[in-house]
Length: 116
Length: 114
Figure 1 (cartoon, each protein chain N blue to C red):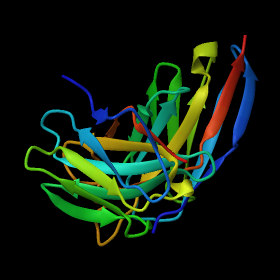
Figure 2: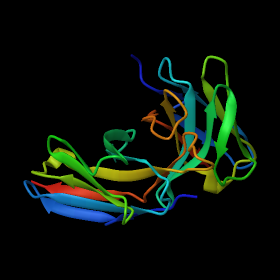
Figure 3: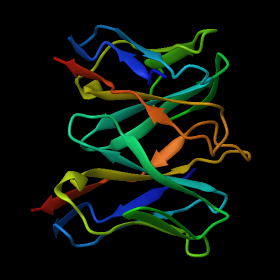
């Protein structure tokens, strides 16, 4: 099965700084890597995802990079704002027999705190 | 379009009881996955249903079960509750069942077992 390791577990930055969260995965067949943001008491919400046929994807202040050879992917947030404070989860599909059947394996989460 | 709806939002039960949680997916979505979220274990996959069939199952005991109806709504049941079952139970729906289908989460049901 898939194993996803996420680091760091906590990250504290000053407003305006950049934040980087890294994840490694074990299953070389994984081909889709979403990132979710979960604010306190709220549902996880997809903020960006990347398919295995590209190395980078950007959406305003958020970017994700993928290194398939090394089996790791990273979330980059630039010009952080206090409202970016949340728990961020990376995930990868569990592939069994060529299809994941809707199962995502999540990293342990990163608590990001942006200080004003 | 309405999002994923989970009911009830909060539940308090005692050990040994059973509980049923409900999840209504986004209209048109046929896949429903269930996850358990705890501070210590994070988000862990329970099972996934597609077209009323369980397609994948996580490493949880047989006390955890689920089903999906013809309208794609899903229920999960936990029997003989234990203190360790206290958690936030999240369901997620997606259009299809492939690995690249985006999963949209509901707000969750917070279960407390006393």
